[in-house]
Image 1 (cartoon, helix red, strand yellow):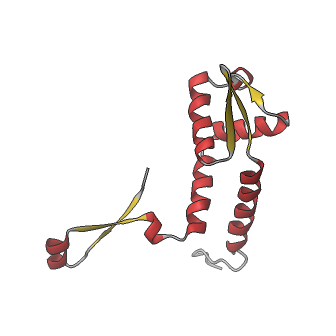
Image 2 (cartoon, rainbow, N blue to C red):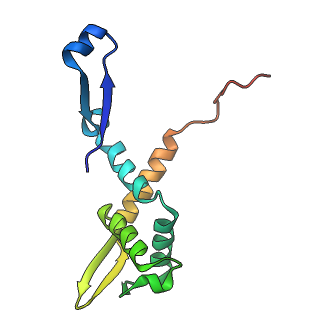
Image 3 (cartoon, one colour):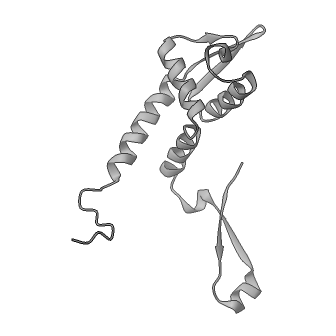
Length: 133
C-alpha cells in the first residue's frame, strides 16, 4: 500500500493548468523516517503491543493458536500478527498444520536503535509553547 501526500497549487491559473500534484511519500521523506514510520505503524495498536510483549515473555516460539493465551479473538490476533509480520517484527514459520510465531531479534534490535535515535532528536529542554510568565 502506497500513501501519497497531496500538494495543491495556490495560484488559480496553475491549478487550472496542473490540477493537483501527487507525490509519493518516498519522494518527500528520507528512508530513515520511512523505516521508523513503518515500525511505529506496526506498534500503533495496543493488541500488537500485547502480542509482542507476550512473545517476548515466553522466550520461545509459540506453536499453534496464540489467541488462546491472549484476551483477543483468533481472527483479531491473526490480523495483528499479519501487521507485525509485514513490519518484520514477528516471524511465522508453517510447520504442518500449525504456524510457529516468534520475535525477529534482528528487527527488534533495529527498532530499539530507531526509537533511541528518533527520540534523541526531539529536544524539549528549551521549548516555549506560547506560555506566558
